Length: 531
Image 1 (spheres, rainbow, N blue to C red):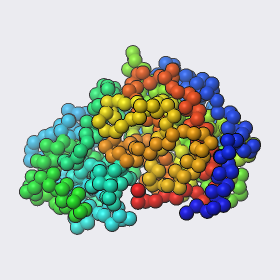
Image 2 (image 1 turned 135 degrees about the vertical axis):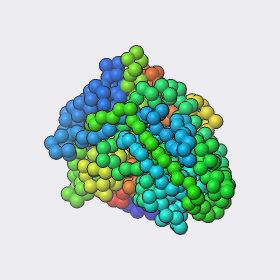
Image 3 (image 1 turned 45 degrees about the horizontal axis):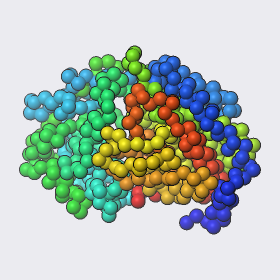
């Protein structure tokens, strides 16, 4: 429970209709005219869609660095605001890559992988359920099996999905449902490769079907190279396989994938087992690969308290988008020019305010989010301040539009008819304390806060922005998000479609919330059992 003294302190900051004098100067700097001017530049034709490792993204990096310099933030990467993110850029060869069983080769779309290295490996097949090891939930798909030197086949997502009584967040996702976490867990158990198939009894589209519903997906995949962190903690490949291929691979067990899922989902019985007389081979080729680098842009506003300034509040976003094909530009105004401008605007606001927060605030705009959250994953592996000093993360990704129905959300979740005052907060089921702080701050701003995406599992929203790597480390980290719309990842995501008044209100709320996070006696706690 929060202390009564804390509640009084926070209420004195944000309620009563007036912003206290020691916050007003920074608060007043948040202006729609500045947001519009900055975003019109970032989403202009001249920045060519800010595709990672292209000229447009480098211009964005230099602009953010310049704004952090003018705000007087402290550089943390030596004497620089730029944290180098070493990257592989590569193109998977669909025709040359395959999964082989008993001499039969399976290519895309039956079997597909993105991995930055060429691979030739073979191993005995082991079925490992959902591939989850969750000690705090007393659940382990690897209990009783030996995965060392083996290829493991896993179901996507989590057990008992849609079951509100599940020890997992049955109405939404937990940290264990993502492919990255499953691959890291398999690697920790000695596996040499991972095969992942959509849950056979699913009541939603698979990840591949979800992605295909976004217009232009195939063109995007063929146009934009894949990227990966050089030296990433993942060093084994994962491959997505079809329902048909999974059924063939598991046939030697004398059962079906559907029956295995039913066993697990009924009462969390572990159904993992080796698949007899089954060896699979993976051959992965890349048609091209090169080493390169991008940059996270980071600046610190040091806290005022001699003891608490060692603790860190992070305000973040990402600057990259989908680039240009030479004739069309994917401008990325909402995704995520809006978040980039939001981080910069708050850096200015906090820097100009004469009173500083007790804790330090790190403003950081990440690289290569669109390629797989690479900048933020790199940061948590190479933090500029000790990661365990991080008390909360406000992550902006798409904070400039009204949420409206689209092909991605149709049939999945209901979107309210009018979302002009709505803000989604994603991940607060892991940190009710964080939610409470924002809700109290919001009494002075008046947005409608929506938590619906924490109760929806099929679109994997929880995993899809830069707050997620922090949540994997038990840090209260929330995605601030105004929602999907038909212009998502389209050339029509332009600056003239932004709701700047709403965006300013969101930044005002973030300003007040970050102020509270930076001063409250007890920072938000992370509950590893999401509810």
